[in-house]
Structure formats: structure tokens, C-alpha cells
Amino acid sequence: MGLFGKLFGALKKTKTAFSEKLRVLFSKNKLGNEFYEELEEILISSDVSVTTAEEVVDRVKAQAIAERLKDEAYVTNLLRGVLTDMLEESEVEPPSYPCVIMLVGVNGVGKTTTVGKLAHYFLSKGKTVTVAAADTFRAAASEQLSVWAERAKVRIVKHEEGSDPSAVIFDAVSSAKAKKTDVVIVDTAGRLHVKDNLMNELRKMDRVVKREYPEADFLKLLVLDATTGQNAVNQARVFDEAVELDGIVLTKLDGTAKGGFVFSLSSELSLPVIFAGVGEKMDDLEAFDSKEFVNAIL
Image 1 (cartoon, rainbow, N blue to C red):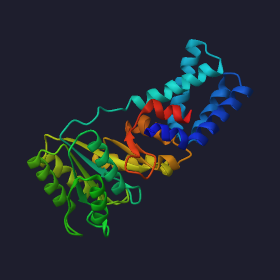
Image 2: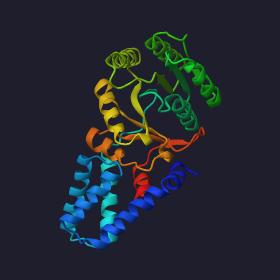
Image 3: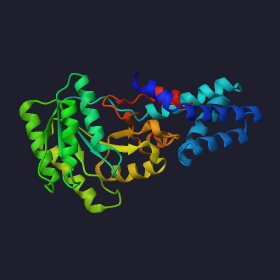
Image 4: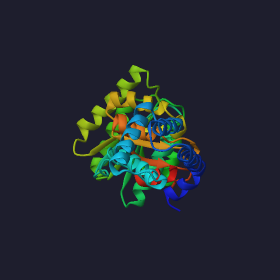
């Protein structure tokens, strides 16, 4: 079963609740100001930000008026199209090779686990992979990553606990260049997005990659726990300001009842979700598909 086969099951309650709210909305309101106000409230209740909900409703309203649509199915399809377009507007091309992927984020979102899953993903695409244990502060972090690297059967570059994370990255990209490795995946320490010194450390790691491996495609991906809700947008905004993010990896997507913040990431920050996880197994992470995601919740 593919990722979004699993996702349809995981988001079944969300889809049912959302569809029921729309059904009730259509049953009591004809298309008009009250209808669109309630549609906006439904979106906000699904963790779409107020700003993004307003934009979605404005787009739906404009098209419905232009096309003189009044039928429930047509308007629902219109909403589906607007939401899909919103996600697709921020999509980026798949990485070219060689590439370096640096995962950043707060504590507890599943970065180390995601490194292992990403390694498995790229191996399944026939690519060679090295992982870098640049989380040198958390006790046993490199050992945990070593377990994932062993499971995925990929090389790992690590230093002693307390070492300079940038030194780990330097060694990892040097090794990758020498061995012509396709993908380097970097695990970094979790950090509160309000701590300037930790953000400065990320900037230093960013500079090392750009200086030492300019020919590589360099992606900085924020790992977000999908159960975080609207606070995920705040996290993304601060990390984006610090290191200019290229996209998002969503974890625990199977555990959330509300996935609306994904549209806010795209609309307000132009940040696409690039990978998404729906379980604990090694292969429970795949490339994100905008159309399938919208179909799973609407």
C-alpha cells in the first residue's frame, strides 16, 4: 500500500467530519455572504490560518460567481481545486544529484527517525547515501542514528559527543565528494526556535555546506510534527528567517485530526511539504502529493 493509501485511512475521520460540515452548510445556506463566512469558519476549525482561509474563500467565491455555480458537488470540486492549486503553487522540483539534505527543527519532532526513513527512500530510488550525525549534544543521538543507518544499510559520519556539528558536516561532505555519494542527509540537534545562539549554529552549518560543496543541490528541510497544528506555521516562519528553508517534512501525519496548516505553509510562507510520514516503519515516508492530500481530507 502506498503512502496515500495509508493516508486515506488515517484521515478518514477528518474527511468525514469535513464533508459532514460542508453537507450541513449546503443544506441550510444558499451561496451568499453567510455561506462563505461559514465556509471560512470550517476551514479555520481545521487549522487553516485566518489569512489563508480568507484567501481560499475569496478564490472559491470569485470562481463560483464567474461560473454561476450553485450545485453542492460543483462548489466542493471548486474548493478542492483551489486547495490543490494553493499547494502546487509552492511546489519545487525534485532534488538533483549530488545533494545535501539538512534536517532542522525543534526537539521531539522525529528528525533522527526521519533521517533513517529518507535514507531508505533514496536507496529505493537507486541512490547512494551517507548520513551525518551533526546532533552532537543530545546524549546517545549518534548511537540512535547509527541504528537507523545500520537498518537502512548506509554509511554514517559521526564525531564524539560535544563535538562541533559543523566539523561533522565538513567531514561528511568531504567524504561524499571523494566517494561520489549521491545524497548526504544531515541530522541536527533539536533547538527551540526562540534561541538565537542555536539558530546561529545552524547558519554556520549552512555556510560550511555552501563553501565546501557548492556543486551539490542543498536542501534545508524543517521537520514538523503534524499534530502541532497552527504553531507549526510559527515554527516554520522563524526557521525560514534563520536559514531560508526549502521545504517541510511532515511526521505523524497519521496522528493528526487537522491538517489545514499545510495550506498556510504554502500560502503564507511559500514552503512546500516535500516528504510526509504516516507511520513508524522504514518505508512509511514518501514524496508528498498535493492532489492526493487534498483528496484525503475533502
